[in-house]
Image 1 (cartoon, rainbow, N blue to C red):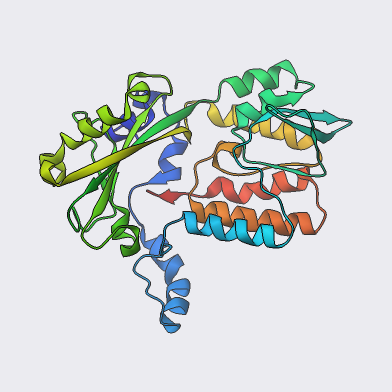
Image 2: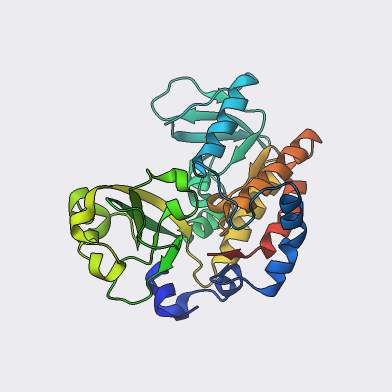
Length: 318
């Protein structure tokens, strides 16, 4: 937990990281993981489905697009690119949601929130008690810049993810999505992504896109490609990518979540940033399914908070 990779990833000295991180985020597969997966692998194998790596043919985004199509087909409405300005509550229930730049508020029956936990608390009107506001402000996130290089070659390596713990590399890892699905790039091209942990507003975050592309390309001899193969690049900035597991973070997060679920009966907090708990997509999907069943049974937020205990014991393989 205190190694160079962790300190690069989180941006704080190792002694300031909570030991919980060691049981939550792992870099290898245990025998228990392998044995737990045997029933699923056998079912897939018996149906003729490849089981070396389960990944969407066109990436994880294809699943979100499918869910969006099904939601619209059933009469649902998606408001994309909107930001909440305030979340109003009265008599122990969320009543209205006001969107930034909009005059008309949305009436709320139930609110399922993946909003980063400190931001959700700050949006509440009237405001929660002072101790809840203070605990929420102590919860911090680690931000991320992703630089993707388009290369004129079939592959850089056979690995999906490669880690770089040394401090001489500004990135913590590279990823090549084509190695998870060949449909992610044309046959004779590939895209190599560089993950650069940072803090929103720092020098790396504010750097020009082209400067970041050229800076990552300069590592080509160490990463494994020729600079002449570079065909371009693009940059993504991901704010609040990872909850920061600082000492004492769980006490503050649990205090805030406990207050929200006790005092707002129609609020259901979920997701990595909402619960301030690291997870992977498989955990998020399972949580969404569980919440759907919970809502169909007309159960409230306090019952949901008790069910969330099952997600307190998850660990994900990175």
